[in-house]
Length: 254
Image 1 (cartoon, one colour):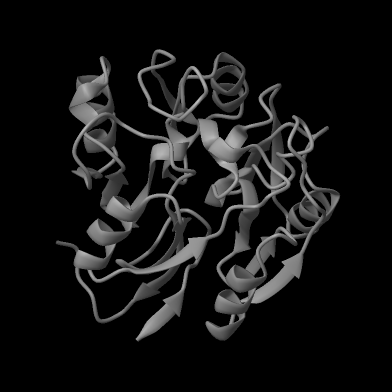
Image 2: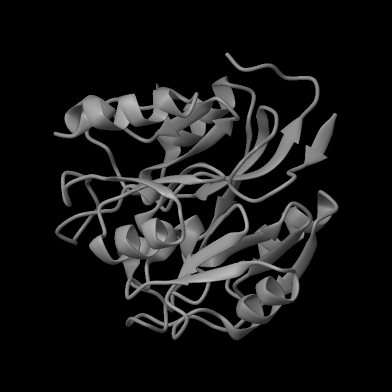
């Protein structure tokens, strides 16, 4: 039986449904082998091709039952509604920063990490109305840049996020920038290559051991009771993240 998440990014049981870019077929296959239904995020012609289908650019789970979706994702919006999720359709996105980052927000516990000047006004109003506190950072690609480990722990390579998150009392592992593949651009981001598959599992698109800070990443996850799951071979690759949508009472971690 599929259940709603209790809070975004942090599944309380094994994930049964996740949103992932349509441009990551090997990752789709790996997730399906684990019994996870994939909701594909389609490429939007209005955006830069390397990120046009990235889930973290188009979808923001505001809570377990409410999603803010870009207007360029009608199929994704329909898929979410069929699962019983309330869908809010937000503003159109563009190709050039900051017109592409309205939904790029990392919700963690009682906080949401974002650049308050680039976040969708709909998201900002909704989150503050529901008691969440903003952690402002200069980084507009906040969700791309953050691996949400637990309600009080993250991994990032971004100095602005590290400083703001630590000031809010979060446990932060700062890794070195780079070493994450993405087409065209110099580097991808840690949040864009991963997502939780269960309370005790973090799934990665690629092999964590290809990153020079692999030992620190594995150790930090282990300290927070989370296993490292490498879903694909090769370098870590930013595909826009794995966004948990539903969990299953019938599945166990494996």
